[in-house]
Length: 97
Image 1 (tube, rainbow, N blue to C red):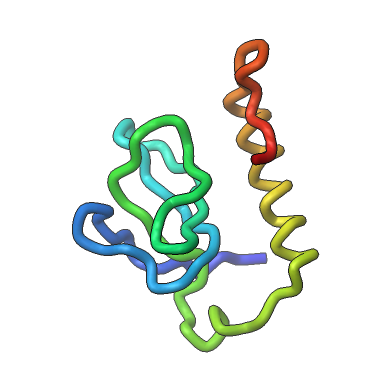
Image 2: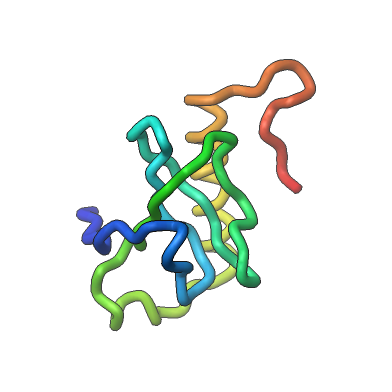
């Protein structure tokens, strides 16, 4: 599946309008994923990020409703990928909150 993401937005100037997962750009130039909800970044990488972008550039597609199962599966997939690339040390392993 091809991802048609949005342009990058500076974190210090803009916040997402919708809750959900976003790709973020870390200060070192790498990218990761973070979740925005209830007016704040609720799940985010340990490293500081400066920009974010949506994963769908077509606003009509972003309004498609997803089931909670789909969101849980996406969150677990992101967490699994995050743990694979950035495993925690000992008791600091990334865990569900």
